[in-house]
Amino acid sequence: RSHVACLSSSKITLGREKQTETPLRSPVWSCNEWDPLEEIIVGRVEGAHVPPFTEEVQAITVKRNWDFFKYRGGQPYPAAHLAKAAAEIETFCNILEQEGVTVRRPAIVDHSIEYKTPDFRSTGMHAAMPRDILLVIGDEIIEAPMAWRSRFFEYRAYRPLIKEYFQKGARWTTAPKPQMSDELYDKNYPDENDPNRHKITDQAKFVTTEFEPCFDAADFMRAGRDIFAQRSQVTNYSGIEWLKRHLGDKYNIHCLSFENGNPMHIDATLFIIAPGVVLSNPERTCHQIDMFKKAGWTVVYPPYPVIPDSHPLWMSSKWLSMNVLMLDTKRVICDVDEIPTVKMFEKLGIKPITLSIRHANSLGGGFHCWTTDIRRRGKMESYL
Ligand code: DAV
Image 1 (cartoon, rainbow, N blue to C red):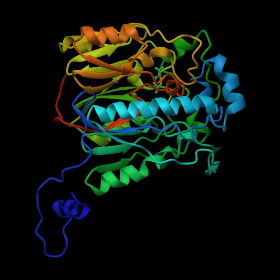
Image 2 (image 1 turned 45 degrees about the vertical axis):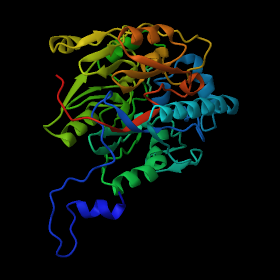
Image 3 (image 1 turned 45 degrees about the horizontal axis):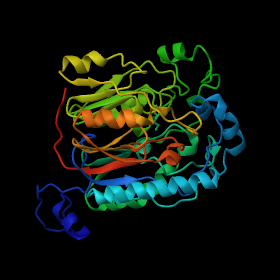
Image 4 (image 1 turned 180 degrees about the vertical axis):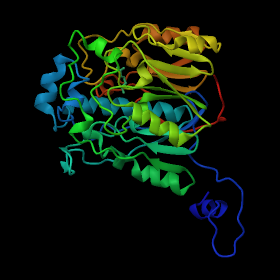
C-alpha cells in the first residue's frame, strides 16, 4: 500500500472528499507476547557504549562489575566482545527471516556524543534493546520516557522506522519526557551488595523517586487487555499511572510485585507464553500469583539458568534464560545452551528454535529484550 492510499483511507479528508469510516490498516499491530509473529525490530550492537556510572546505573550493578563501569563509562564496550555479539545478532535475524518473520533494524547512531540539558549531562548507551523503549499496544507505538540519563535520547535510533510506521497508519505516542534532574534519583540508595537491599525493595523503595513519571517499556508484559506491570528501579508508580490513564478503561493494568532485590524489566521474572500460561521465576516469588491461579491459568516455574559465572553479564542476572521470544504458541526462540529450559519447552509441546547470543546477552538482554514486536496476527482480547 502506498502512503497516499493510506492517507486517503484515513479520516483526514481533503477538500470535498467524503469522510470515510474505513479503518486504516496499521502496519503495527501486536496485542500480546504469543500471537503469530509477522514483523519485528531487532536491536543493534553497532555503536554500543558503556553508560556513565551514575547512581541509577550503580543501583542495578553488581559490585564485581563496578570497575568495568567506572573505567569504561562513556567508552565503547570491548571491541572483540561486540564483534562476537554482532555476529550472533546477525544469525538471530537470519533465523527469524527463515521462520517467515520480517526483520527491521534501528539506525546506526553515534551514542558517544555528550549531551547537556538544563538538568543533566550524559553520553548515550545503545539501540540494542528495543523492548526497553518501545511498547506496542494494538496499533499504537509508545516511546517510553526511560529513567536513565544515558537513555534519554535512545528513541532517535528508532525514529526512521517509527516515522515510516506512522506514515503507513500506526498511532505514535511519546510519553512525557522526564527532566531527569537530581530529584528523580535517590543518591543514598543502597547498592546491590547491601544485605538489607531485599527489605528495601520489599518496602517499595527504589533508586528512582516519584518526582515525575518514568518507565521502561520492558516493565510491562502484555496479554491483550490485561497488562502486567512492576514498580522497578526504572519504572515508578506515576509512570505506571500515566500509562493506565493513557490507555483508558479498555485496559487493565495489573501492578505486580515480586521477591526481588533488584527489579528492572519484568521479562526475566514473569513471562506469558500462551493464553493462560505464565512462566514465573522460581527465585522471584510473585506476590499476586494466586490471581493467575484463580483465573485458571497454568503457572510454570522454569528451571534455573545454567550460564557459567565466568561469562560477563554487565547489566542483568542469569535469568535471561527465560527471556525468550515466542514466534507463536508452538515455536519459541531460546538459548541453545540453556538445556533445562529447552527441555521445559519441549515438554510443554512448544518447539524450541535454538541459538546462542551469549555475547549479546552481556549487554543486558535476551531474545525478548533484543526485539520488539511490530506485528502479530490476532485480536485484542481479555484473558483474565
Ligand atoms: O531480571 O536480570 C533482565 C532483563 C533486562 N532487560 C533481570 C533483567
